[in-house]
Length: 260
Image 1 (cartoon, one colour):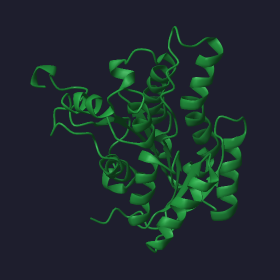
Image 2 (image 1 turned 90 degrees about the vertical axis):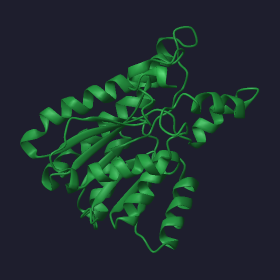
Image 3 (image 1 turned 90 degrees about the horizontal axis):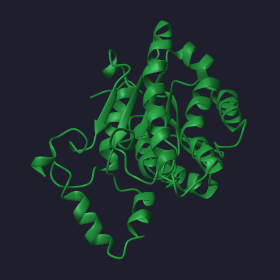
């Protein structure tokens, strides 16, 4: 299927690892021009090298998105180099375990900056370019906004905000034909997820306990499966889809727990 993404310039925050890297690779394979946005230049360069070895195109911007002004610098640099922005994938963030007892006011605010504020800032600064291109926005979210998790107030609140911004922007940007959707993730294996598993005495046992609760095939969602949905939503093949929260989770959030 031709997704008609050839040469589309698409920013992917947190694009060097995990879900973000899978999205970048999928976009490159569809002949789009993804821009990796990550805080670690070595990671950015490593992924870019992998993509170019496959004879695909991409670029990167090294930025700490929690720093004031960083999103504007990224957008300005991309526009200076390439003259356009056709899409944004807001993906960067971390489940940082800032809970009611494990954090304080400052920690909670910092968690919102890590996980939500830069979603707004990146789109805010790119909006003139997105209006010009009639671009597309996809926000990556987490099940924690729906299910809760315990001990992660900052991350859960940020993901509730991501969902709300998805629908708010879908309404606000209707006159400009800019579509906005979210892909909600439950259990997907990423470097950060593995790091969390490794905090348990029996990581393999913990993983087995989790996968037994995932209705479809009793397995983790693959990052490539998330990327498939994101790239579809960025394409004109989803041309009448906006304001949607789409769960790529093997039925984890919404199917009856009795079946597990």
